[in-house]
Each structure stands twice: as structure tokens, then as C-alpha cells.
Image (cartoon, rainbow, N blue to C red; front, side, top):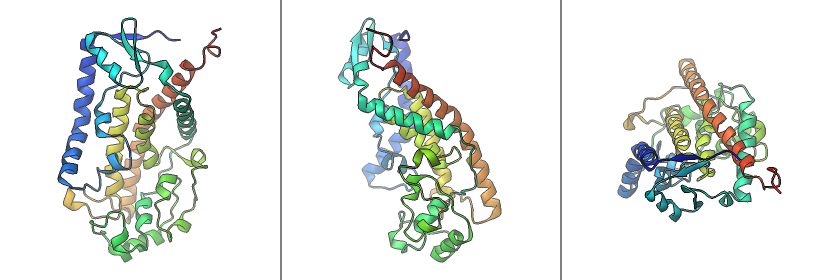
Length: 301
């Protein structure tokens, strides 16, 4: 087993403050909107579709292999998954249950398979258009927002372009008439076979896979995945059929050749930025699974 890193109290407190301040850029405005009963069709997604609570997002975790020194570290014992060790407080290996290990195995398999594929950059964000295709305007997901091209114009775009969405959690929100128009018919069972690193939703989901490992993941990595997801979400909605100009978002007009080229360039950039985060998560899952094997598998008695 690898030797633990001991962090002095001043060092880990500085990291804790930096993470909290970084995440409060996003959590504080969300909490204010929630208190006011105000919806944000772009950013609420980060806290509603994804189930990690704002308070948990702000909470710093050192990750495994770290001992927090100093008297203030004792407050971590009030959290699940920590124990007192020689020199301070650390994550409790026993808290990495078989259920958590099963999650880590799935995440590792999914991300490792995704990493082997070349990015496909020709979907143009049509999943959002397919979600409103031939739907009554009062039944679409963001009914409070107008459609830039109106219902008929939106339907024409869906019918004029090829849809090839391989992300199950996007596909499952397609309208019923749009589903057969998709060249792929992803299911939960085929998720590992179909996800690819150019997909905006697959790259946003790196945040989900990070928090599924909480507290056994450094919060700095979680924060990196969250901020990437936030930036991708903005592109996702700018390329959608909705008119978001009232919120200050200018559209990426994927109904035009120029707009599709703009979208593909941004999609390629996000794929590039997601690659090291995916690699870090893969390595982290591998380390967790190796370090937390039963002692007999690690060479013990």
C-alpha cells in the first residue's frame, strides 16, 4: 500500500478555503435563486439533473492517501468515512464498501472504453431539438422560453439533419416522434459500448462520476469536473432551439452551416479539455480498487 501524505493544518486549511471559494461562485447564486423561487434554465441543470447538493459541492475532501494533521482535523470525524490515525485524521478504508467498489468498477469500465474512441463531432447538439420535436409548446422542458424558430421551424431542422445521439441519458428525453429518427437507439445496457469523448453529455457526466466516488476523491478533481460541466452546459443550451438572449446567451445557430462549424469547434475543444480529467478519474478508480482489495489479494495473510 502506498505511503500516506501528511498535510500540515495550515496547508490543508488553505486548500479547503480555495475549494470552497471556487465552488461558491456557482453555489451561492443558485441558492439565492432557489430562495427567490427563480429558475435558471441553463445553470439549474447543474444542481437538479445532477444530484450533488451545493453544500456537498462546497465541502472539501482530501481524497485517499492523505492524513490531515492538526487539532482542527478532528472535525472531519463528524463526517462519514473518516477515522483517527497516527498523525491525524484520514479516510477510513473500511468505508470503501463493496457498493462503492462496484460503482468504481463501472465508472472505470465506462471511462476506459470511452477513452479508446475518437471524438465524433457531428451531432451538433440536436438532442435538445429532438426533445421538443412535434411537442405541444406548453409541454416542452423549458416552456417559459420561446423557441427561436418557432415550433414548425424547429421541426424542420430536426427533419433536415441526421440525428446520431449515442448518449442514453440524452436520448431518453427525446420526444416520442423523434426517437425513431435517431440513427442509434442507446439503452442503459449499451452505454459502455456507445459513449464517445466528443459527446457534450459524456463530458459533463465526468462531474457525476466524480461525485459518485465522494468522499474518496480529491475535491480539486471534483471541482475541475464541475467547472467543465458548467461551461459545457452553456454551449449545450446556446446550441438549443430556445431563445436565451434575455439571459445574455447568444445562440449557436446549428441550423446553418456556419453554426454547425462553430459548434464542432467548441465540441472539439471540450473533448480536448475533458481528456485529462477522464484520465485522472480512470487512474483514480484503478488506484481505489487496487488499494482497497482484501488483504489476501494485496499479498497479506
